[in-house]
Image (tube, rainbow, N blue to C red; front, side):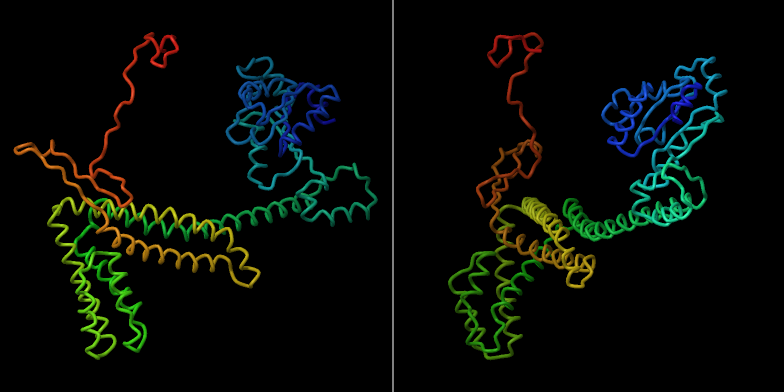
Length: 434
């Protein structure tokens, strides 16, 4: 009734709805009443500009979703404005904005209200709220229903009271607080992953710019891995239970060993000294062999080529492990909520478990790098005597799977000849190439 009455006196009306479904339902009701109107929602967004341009003409009725929110300027009299029609609209009271129900956020309601009375133009806004709306049904409509029953008011009797406005604002405030807590909770989860990302990206940048690539660092990696192997296989207090063969097999996974290594380790073990002293001697002996093999390989292919190969190994290993880490953290995030049934905070569990997973990544990173150093071959093509440095072929890094990758960037080559306009198409169709 209000829409029809204001439209008949030449006042433009903008009706705001919260969803496309209710937008179309209201449109069907207006069609039954014979009220001409325009429908603005995401289904007909192609006509958005033209609908908004004419929404300020006399008697125009526009039903819109949140698309008619912030940034929409409805010009009285239409666009381009006609002076006579603009004057008629101003005399009728300007644009009238109806809200069919309150949104969950007061910000969106205020944006809809702001379509009226822009830049000194006359206008008004009003919200029509039912006790059966989702917002009122969930928050606090029972008190108002009880008051209406007590006073004997009919269901279609409109109520204008500050108590209603306060109840609506309180309900919206509760929902806004709920959404704020939800966003804050998501941010806390993201912050855990962001810390991992900062460490991994910093490590990758240092590898890429060469500051992480030092011979001493690679040597320390060898020492750490060999120490872990020795300590793992010499946990028993009884020297007779130590399995020298397993130590040798695990060390062979890193670099090749000569047959006399076993007798040397047996000789060190038979000294019957302190357990920790023997572990140190085992680790020092094997580490010395690893560093000698590492130095021999570096001498064979050259220091520069060795550094390039190390950079390739470090970056490739870190990239693959980081992708696996992202999947592991995503799986953890989707399953950690179930731990709340065990009276444990899912966020705390996510932080603790995520830290353990990330520390495992760093440990596996070192193990994989050390294991790949001696498995990657570097093929250095011979260069012609006197050839300039830029013309010399780049070294090829040969992967253990039989792949190869150049240490220098590659340039994509064209796979097909250049075809001019209107030349016969090379596909053989006989048509001209466009």
